Length: 224
Image (cartoon, rainbow, N blue to C red; front, top):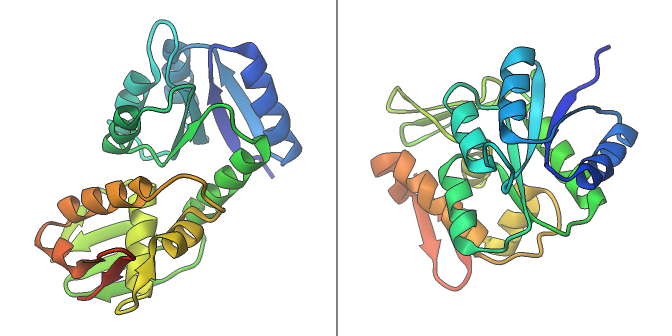
C-alpha cells in the first residue's frame, strides 16, 4: 500500500529535516521543496500529494503566492508555517483557504497530530454521513456543502466547523470546546481563530449564516 505523501516546503534545510524525520517516523512519505517555485512545480507534476506544509517567507515565490496558485486548482489541505506572529498574516492565511496556521517554533509532535487530524477527516472512505438543516446539506463522505441546492466552496477547517455546528444543533458550544473538537488538539492560541473562521463561514453560506448564533462571552450555537 502506498504511503500518504506530504509536501514540506521551507527554504531552511534544518527545518525540512526536522519535519521530515517526525513525519517519516509517523509513516508518511515526505517530499521536499526549498522554494515556492519548486513547490508548485512538484505539486502539479505529482498530482498525488495529500497535504502541504508551507513556509511563508521563501525566495522566488513566497508561501502566500504558492497557496494562491494551488488553491486555484485544488483543495489539498495546507498548513502554513511562519516565524512571524502577526494577526494580519493569520487573517490573510484564512482568507486564502489555509487549514491550519502554525507559528515557529512549534512542537513537532503537535504538528504531526494536526497533520493526522486533517488527513483523518479528509481521507476517502471516512465516515459516511449527510447532515441537513435549514436548507444546508453537508455530505461528509463527498466533502461537499450545498445551500438551497447551490454548492458552496469551504476550506477544510470551515467544513469541519460547520459539520460540528450541525452535529450539535441547538447546543451552546464554548470556544474552548469548539477548539478541542474541531482542531482536535489542546489549542494554546486565543478566540480569534474561531471567530475568524465563523465570520468567513457565515459570509460563504449567505443568509443561512444567521443560523450560527453568537453567545456573548461564551461561544456559539447553531439553530436552523
